[in-house]
Length: 140
Image 1 (tube, rainbow, N blue to C red):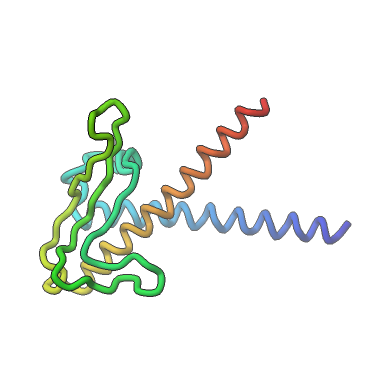
Image 2: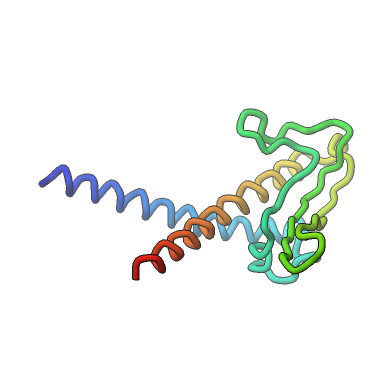
């Protein structure tokens, strides 16, 4: 019986730590949203999550090369919107442009990379909640 209780305690601790990480992530993400002036293109913070995805050009988002610059490219935050009614279903929208990546200050580049990772972290929670709700509707 105690091993079942231990597993429940471990699971509860994990869920609690993810929720705390999520709340902290949202605070920092919103601060970056303002700091990077993305608020000039997306008026309300919550509207960020209406995009299908947000990507980055000019720097790597791969785990093994996170933040490495791609010479000759421009550092830019790109949002992907999706409209199933439109002739062209998806569209890239520039949310922030910072110039040639070689000339961008390292701390600014790092903030942009952090913004993208933090956005994706929150978006993954939203996706998880969406599919959980869908499964719940299958078995009322």
